[in-house]
Structure formats: structure tokens, C-alpha cells
Length: 256
Image (tube, rainbow, N blue to C red; front, top):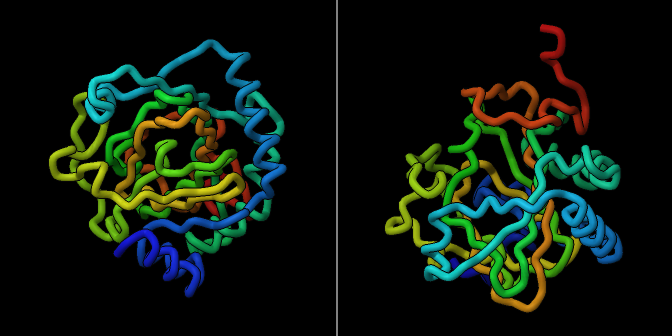
């Protein structure tokens, strides 16, 4: 199915139904363009205050054809700026997350700002987030807030619709933690172009990646990973300062 056909299908049914069927859902204009612009400025101001770090995977260089690329990021953004603390508890976001999971309770796993610089923003090979922090019930989802437009030339997210139904897949550790590129080529995945203010929701089992930003403008996003609080980690492999914070509802396991 082409992206145009998928978009038509997304408009015909609820985001929750589309998410269950395809493993992702793009929610248009969840925040306004003006809000997105303000958050973009907040992201870049925050990164300017921090010591630069580049989390580009070694395997990403091969996708980029061997050319030098870079990525800027920040974990746990809400600990550095109150603007992000407000955003992750905004009911416009948490109500959608709850509907997609089928649970009234939404718990934070972690947040991360990603900026792909203009003309050389690093790609991500195809992978499942589940490989990085597996859970027992697989309710974990991601919300990617777009703070500027993300057309294909800016290295937008690419997905394999329905791949979440295959469950956890074996990943290659060398050069990152990703799926074998020969079996999961980035260019064959469906590009999910987005506008500033759109939020892309993904199951952590959905196979996805993203291309190189070859445009003349940075691509700026905030990643929020969330879960049902009753979905416990299968392995203690991913620490974050904010993990366990309730974004909506309650933690039924608290105190047990």
C-alpha cells in the first residue's frame, strides 16, 4: 500500500484502529504551528547550552554513502526546560496515548530531543525500539513531536506498516542496534512526511528508521516513549531520570 493510500485509510478510521492495524498513526496538528515554533526555539536554545554530543550509529554512515553526518540530541529534556515538562502531561497528547494503548494510565519511559542538522543530518537504520528496552506486555509506544516540517528530503521517519504484528525481531549489534540492512532496506519503508505540530505515534514493535536530512533546514523533534504502568521491563537495560513518572491516571502497582 502506498503512503497516499495509507493516508486515505487513516482519514477513514479512528487513530486507535489505524494504530492497531498498522503499528503507527500520524495525528495532524496535535499542537498548533505557533506552539511548534516555540518548542523548536526551546530545543535549539537548550542544545546550545549543553556540551555537544553526537549519538550517530556507526551503521548510519553506510546509509549516508560514507559521507560525514551528524546528530544533536538531549535525553530527559524535561529536566532542563519546564516547557517540555508541561508538554508531556498535556492532555492533547496523553489522551491520544491512552486511547492507542487501551489504558487510562500513561507512564513515562523517557524523552529525547533529536535535531538533524541541515544538509548532513544523520539517518537511522531500520530497527524496533523494543530491542533497546523490551517489556513484558509490549504496550510501549513512542510519540514523535514535529517542531518543524519533515518532508522526505529532511530525513522523515519511514515505517513498515503492520510489522508490529511480527513481535520482537533479532537485531544486529555491530554499529548500533538495528535490523540487517540487506533484509530491511531503509529505502523500501514507507516515508511518513509530517508538518510542524503533527505527532507520529509508533508501537515500539513497529520497524522504522529515517533518512539523511539533505535539506537546507534542521529537522527538530521531541521523542516521548510511554507505556502502561502495569507493563514491566523484561530487562533492566535502559535508565532515565524520568522513568516511571505518571503522565495520565495512576500507577496501580505503586507501593507493591
